[in-house]
Length: 116
Image (cartoon, rainbow, N blue to C red; front, side, top):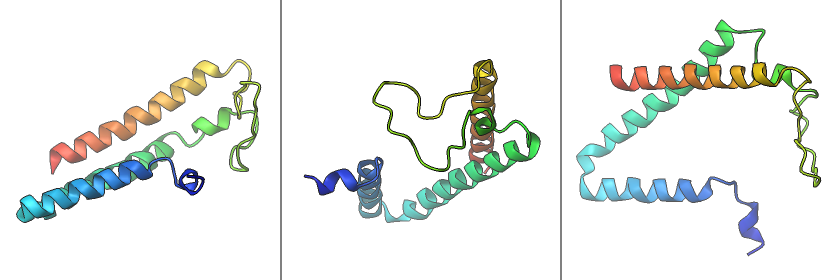
């Protein structure tokens, strides 16, 4: 059971997705290229949306409102405090930057999925 905890958090969803892909391949193999095409469009839309946000707002990245650099790894804080706190007075701006990025990426994904 200890080895199970070493898997990434989304391993169960990966297994479910692979099983569903197998069901699609078994029940209707003609639809398999369509499913893979749509999955590729979603992945492409995510990447394009992310880079569109970075290009449109180069000085307002969400991580620029954190007190310390987050790339060094999380700190284990058992006291219930945030691993990477936001700079005092910038919580609303930090939240707006997160929502802005989510809306831009979501809009690009939906637009690409509907347009193709």
